[in-house]
Image (cartoon, rainbow, N blue to C red; front, side, top):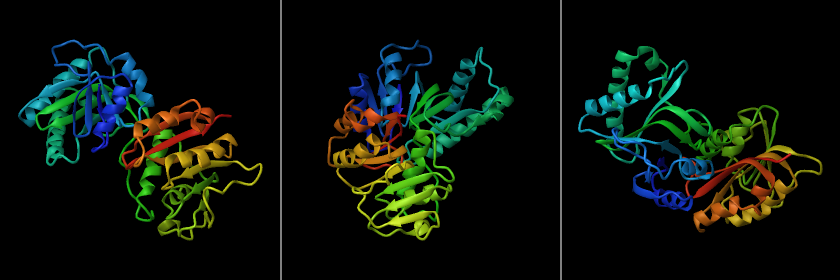
Amino acid sequence: MLSLCQHGYEALLERELTGAGLAVTEKGPGWALCAGGANPPDEPQATGAGSSGRLALPSLAFPHLTLLAPREFKGESVNALAAQLADFFLESLRGERIEAAWPCVFQTVPEVVGLGRRASGVEKAFDELLRKKLARIAKLAVPELPRGAGEARGLFVFFADFGRVFAAREAWLGGQRRMADDDAAPSRSYLKVEEAYIVLGREPAADETVVDLGAAPGGWSYSAAKRGARVIAVDNGPLKGGALNHPLIEHRLEDAFKFAPPPGVTCDWLFCDLVEEPHHVMQNIAGPWLAHRWCRRFVINLKFGHVDSLALLQEIAAPESPFAKHAANLRIRHLYHDREEFTVVGEINP
């Protein structure tokens, strides 16, 4: 398997994969290769990171995209790489019918200067080859990852370097992706909650209720309100941008740790993005809100800048944590737009 992560977090990705029982054989900017995960085109699939590795993927936080049973290709030119990818794809189509849109995704590490141009050139040459041989299938290709988390089938290509490419027909998606900004959003944190909706597979809807703890300057509150949800934004700090004086946002100048809904009231969403010690947030916000079922769904950020991130992951998922006790569809992710923090999403058990 070849797992991709946010650039700069390769060491944490390796630690997480190793902790899941996977042997990391090589890593580079934004990626880690696990034993048994890549083969030359003329060799059979090796064993080692197969079914057990796949079973671990839903619980991993750092991988954004994992190529399953990838093939490795090398070439000095755009045309050489495109030809190898086309041969691989066409060979893999034997016995398969494609009748609907399918993802055809070429990815690189943005921080490697010029690599994006190389990938774009190979992608264009590959598309031309595919159109010549299978025009109908080429027209159904979509150059974007599917929304949501889980397994997907298509063609997933990753450029580890200018002349070294990995490709796979199947991939595991963690749900992370780069989001489009909104000029009215009062802060960069807006992008995090927008991305979290994709991980959870649901977003606030019109007339739903949201409590946003530690709301200022209001990025998460604005995100919910622009969808028609009614928001109580709890923070002693000021709201800004599109959140300021928004008709669907009620700003409460209160302590987020002391705020609770009135007796018998359940909100649809709890948002929490506080710059606080993560155990303090788990104990004093996640604990009571989830145990008392004051919300139906939640998006909570936990900062790991001053704690061991892998130890924190284990604590979040541990049977005695408030998340494991009270939540369903629990997902812990290091998002594309996260820094030193985890985003935890889920739904409260009935």
